[in-house]
Image (cartoon, rainbow, N blue to C red):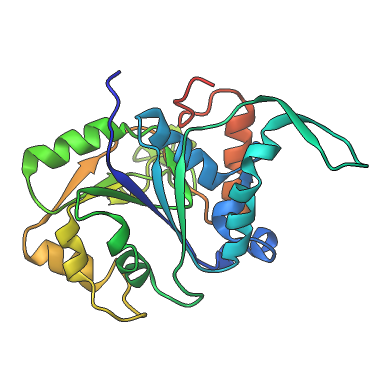
Length: 265
């Protein structure tokens, strides 16, 4: 597979994660683990699979936890021998990703749009990628970029149809159940799944304030100007919004059949 290069990947990682408070009292939601690694790591691995290794992480709530994770990443992925009297450390082998990560403190209470605007100087006035730090899927990043280039507008949003929360059934006129679907798609609506492809002009739709919610005025104005297209992802996508979501994602990962694990190692 031909790798994609020279695009920055922005990942929103500053929210409070209030609906996942059992996990987020001590760490931000993107650091909640699936299979022993933060969901943020899983998202980065998806992009890295396509040759995208330049990341800009937009920090907010407990951003120091993310910084500490990556500051110690090389050591934590290595086998080491440490001499406690001299402090000398020998690294025997290391399994690491070739990532270049910029970590930006964007403010504790800053809204999503304003966080994105603060990354303007890091994208080099080039096409960039953007997503949320809490959702995984078997999204073909290469195809999203190809679709974006084909329509030629300012933004592509990946959309998905999440599973419904409850089983659905069909009945005949006598109320006999004729079909039952344990996990149907929701109400057939397509929703924002993140995994955006953006031209730098998208940032012009975001005012220089701290309270700009990206999903409100900026996206609505892009729609108004006919500058927003969607790449419809018809396979697996799931956000981690609640403890139940976290448990489901871990169960899927532990099955060794997680659809979003597209990387080889």
